[in-house]
Image (cartoon, rainbow, N blue to C red; front, side, top):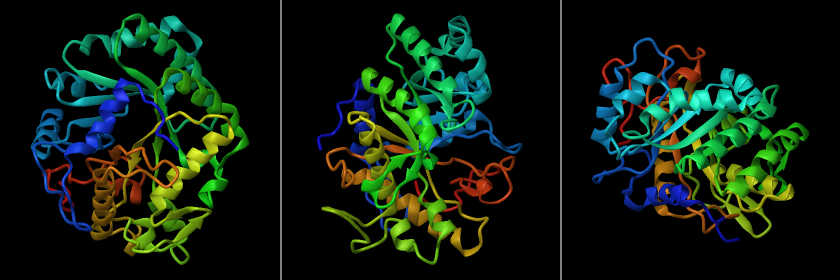
Length: 348
């Protein structure tokens, strides 16, 4: 199929792939002046470097797209004047109820958390909730998106409003053409997708082949999970898959189409692989292999079998190991140690 027609901001995202350089398996990315894969900047740690040091790190490795999970004032203030960095800002999940109940509350949130930074921070996306669909607060997402989109339009701002969803929305995902949303996801997510279709704004999706592999390492090939398979692993009609990432991505596309949504683009808001926390399934070498090959996939400009004309774009999770996340693998998705900014493995 043809690539869904994006809005102008998404064209910016598609341009990320233009300047990436090649890598070999899990070796470092050979950097030019910039890299066009984004990074997630999480703050759940008590030993994290200062925001100014983090922004300096990003600049040193050529990162120009970052995502933060809430409008942290320290980070936003440090980003003043750094117009080359495109920022995605999240709304806290716990704020959704009040915002869904009142347009005035949305205006107040925007006036406090976004408006003071518009002149000198390059905010490109606002995400309404992080993986809250499907779930008890899932119905709060759409009214907040609608109010916020109307507000942004009334101010003639080029900020896209969307949400971030996980693959738990899929009740079935194998083979990809069987992709189908769960009943609760159909109820909560499909109206959001139809709104995004009208707004010509992408949905942000979190895709983690690691979790599928870790749940069944006997029957799922590590090479398939880390983009390393040299031959077709899954045949789905005329579509052939050599990596699990593409299969998961396309299962979501198929699910959207079955519910009448064929023109919404997808940006990968999170993907990654932990470097510790689950024995020999999580080593720095495997994490480097997965993330390095994801960058290579983006750099290739190739789409997925279902959307071959749509280049994959996205953010790696995460910048740092965060010691206030749940014990186990959740603490070990970072590319850098927070205490000394040393890479856990070489990627950039």
